[in-house]
Amino acid sequence: MRRFNLAVLAAVTLSTGLAAAPAHAYGSYGGQRPLGIENCTATACHFDVPPGTYDVKVLLGGEAASSTSVTGETRRALLPETAAPAGEHVARSFTVNVRTPEGEPTGPAGTPGLDLVLGGSAPALAGVTVTPARHVRQIFLVGDSTVCDQPGDPYSGWGQQLPQYLRKGVSVANYADSGESTATYLADSRLWATVQPQIRPGDLVLIQLAHNDKTTDEATYRANLETLVAGVREKGGEPVLVTPIVRRWFNADGTLNNNTALLVNGLGVDHPAVIRSVAAAEDVPLIDLTAKTKALVESLGVEASKALYLYNEKRDNTHTSVHGATVYAELVRDELVARHLVPEGLVRVG
Image 1: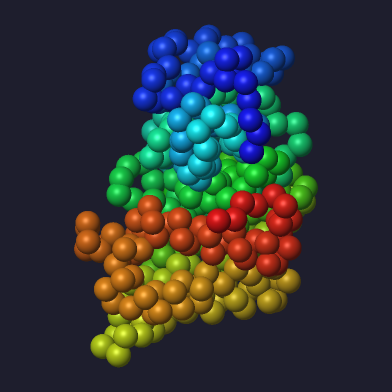
Image 2: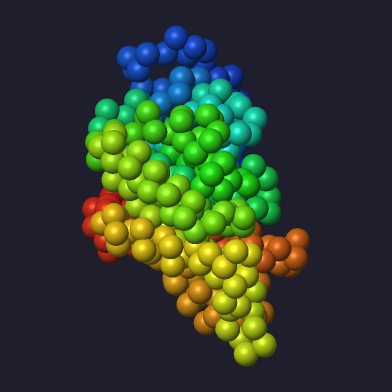
């Protein structure tokens, strides 16, 4: 942390209030200059930029002790809550993907440009700059409702929480979409046909599709996964297969049900097992999120594990709460580092 002359650089806090300022019109913005705090009000910032990938630097803190988080676009967590002692400022940077639609690919378009929202127990924003990202590695997410940018509370996908654990230079482009199977994802022009042309050499593509493959036979499921893997490699990207998060469905002995919870469909297709097999056969990195989430849910037990899902709110044992999605995003982050898919220096911990 670094101490600033507060007479020169006064912090903006929700307690003192930032004068509301209309967003400047940058409809023709071509990245010639950084955009700054003049595009912010007391609780949010709006930057009229075209779709693309942008580096954001925020300066947090003020005269009083503060604690600030940043979300953006469709409820994406971009920066975890960050404390700054009274009279000090803390600088943080991250890279954000701006696209249309801004949330689920088959959902509403959302607000054009980049929107940031300040949160936390005592938010304080002293400065912000937004510039086009020149050197960035994209992490594309191909998945279902347990991964996607969910539009409203209390739902959240783990992909919605992942960006907060990545530093400047790595961005998440979440193209997960509710209700999709491997078959529907490949067939919809708004999904795979939109993602694949954007993949560049070195980009990661995390693929977690299983929850909705309830009527997909094993041969078709395997072939669909192989098609996705080949499509990523065709563009020079690196595919990463991710087994699905478990459903919170317990046996009487406190273990998870072998079928419903562990994603075995009505045809007897063991989705995690097929994913593991394809990963081994195709020499694709594997994140075994089924095994990770199974161990966690069983260790918490019937009652404590409810908080990970929407059981209390919706009697939903499939979709995660913000808390659960955040915990599962941490598991993904740890696996990305452990498998040397993202350098340790480009992730946030704690």
